[in-house]
Length: 59
Image (cartoon, rainbow, N blue to C red; front, side, top):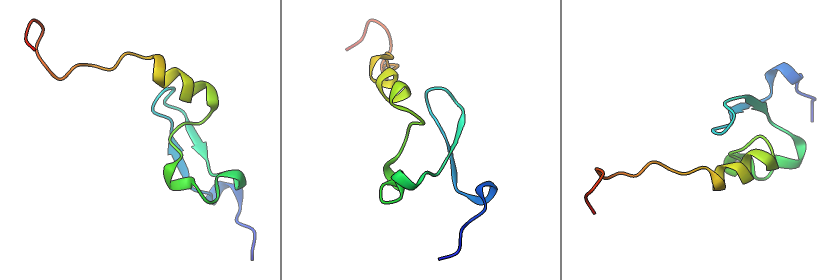
């Protein structure tokens, strides 16, 4: 297997910090499921309130 230059590795953008992050060997099997650049961002995403899909005052 040939080594891929680092500048040609796949990238994603973290939805929490909006920074790009690059594929890592440890994510090889799970790259499609990786969403966050770090544990810190993953934890922060669970504590950040999400917007509601309804109007205020209605249920």
